[in-house]
Length: 457
Image (tube, rainbow, N blue to C red; front, side, top):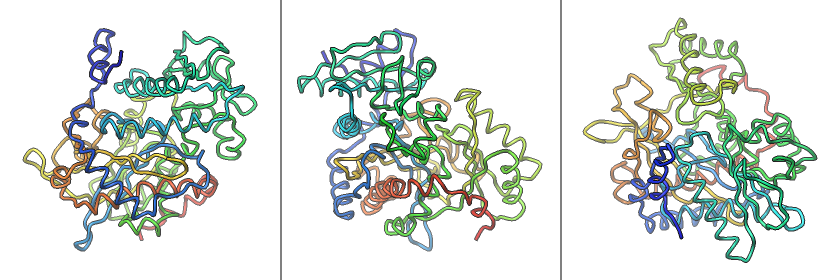
């Protein structure tokens, strides 16, 4: 018996869950069109960037916005997402399989012990897209069983030691998972069992000692974390630093650089915001570390005064901690110049939008898979209310999948974009992750953050 996303969404109601179906976006995908764009992008990149070490990156996504400068179209990279990227089922079935195959490749490349490999897959509590992980597990299980291997799937409570299986998959959410984890001899352990692969980089983030080893001695780790570069994709300022280091490469694909900075505590945050408000003429936004779904993002505009700073920070922290554990810190904050975004017509109004592209490793090379366009919740009036520029479909004030567009010729027309625009975005999405890998140590050791927001030049 096989089951689909629709089956899981329907059945979830019987278990007092509310899963969000991504089918309405998936139905808008033109798989043949995306194949064409991918082929053209790979031609332009001579087959795709080759990773210097394939274990540093397996899967992620990059978010872009479109702008016009002197009549020329350019793009901003808003943020990067790592091994815990979501939205997979908004792609076509073939594209989703490419994403799942990236996780499979990580499992295949892991070391294992005596022929047995243990995989830990972590998810958020009350995850509205839980079906993505369930279908991925089924895909992996069917793949390995098709090769004659014995596969076991456990949750936190049902797990037990066993030597009878070739592949053991443990599926758990963070709220019950963390108390069962330890770290010893460069292995993450679950209930004393060595973990060979971690899918859900938040597991490593919650272990300071693991994070220290990832940054300083990642090759010593025996647990393969998807991805080891999570501290770069988690921290938006580190993502922007990667783009800063690789700006010459990214210019080939019309990527425009944004001014940015990083505040490690409230004192630094207040200092930078006072400088922006009193000396700079552009709008900025602040983003907490490791946030998602727009949680904690707040604008700093020409209307903002120094007296507003404490209230803005309070509002940001409140949003962040409402989505995440109250014990989780929102620092360091990223302070970023706001993009001059292009607008499109949507429901008889002008809206902002972004483009998300998923990237995978395939045998050491980076490949663009496909993606979605996401349109803002409210019309753009220039007041910079969050709903005017935060485009998240599932993470901000509930699911609104009707605002998501699959990639097709019709979608490009609606977005006022050309095929060459999308080809360049596909290329840039691969190159930026390669830049993160190439500059892994340089980014991790960077300590001159105070030089980045000294002026607006």
